[in-house]
Picture 1 (spheres, rainbow, N blue to C red):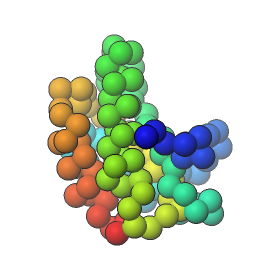
Picture 2: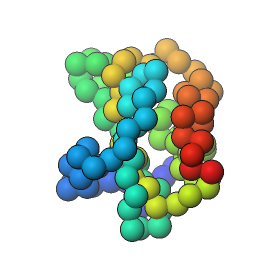
Picture 3: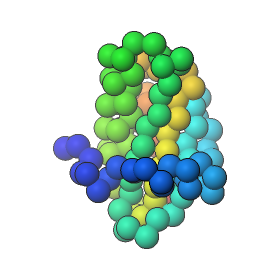
Picture 4: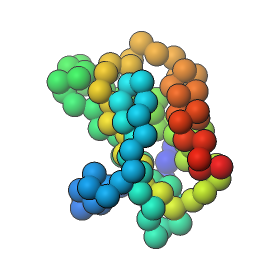
Length: 111
């Protein structure tokens, strides 16, 4: 099952999340998060063309991160956070299980 439309971040929330959000470091990038008033966890994934030049690989990484978020961090524990994942390295060679393990270990505060 994929994230619902209400589970994504749009427009102006991005700047607020960048300015006011707390940051967690991951081996492949950053996670910024901020409390929202929606009662649902929302996610935005950013991968620059400079980091991963192939659009196919960028979309694959986004799909893996969204699914990992949905399974591990998105619906367990506390609700009502906006998350921004910024990839700084190419993680297309990592297995989804490894990515889930990184997210699970770093985002254990949500439980």
